[in-house]
Image (tube, rainbow, N blue to C red; front, side, top):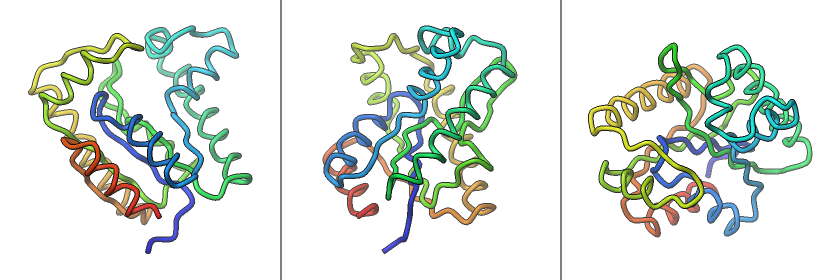
Length: 184
């Protein structure tokens, strides 16, 4: 059994992170934080953005400030919550290239779970999303993104001593059961 306080569930858009996190948090009784939503709440409170598209089109320095503010909010949550599941991409694409979006130096997850899925399932989930209009990128782009995410999280886990698990989410129930088993 792994002793942990913060678990980061990371993956590209469309792998099912949010669905897995909300279900796992409910089953286990842990606190769930969607990092993108928390960043959007910060941006809205500062009258900088009304939606994620506006948020991620802000100047990169402004995004970084919002990113840090959201990370400090999660750090403060640690004082009142025993275990927190943080749902985030881990790596994001910006106008300057890929950037690690795991808030290094502010929160340090004890466990990082990389969720991956087939290209077909990612595209299907993106098309089926009723809340957000998600981009439908090429197979090559998605594979590059997943490889960069994997390499970044491996490096992070080695440097910061986080446990690292890579799960396939091509069957939701099986993947959820694996997450629950890891986190209980």
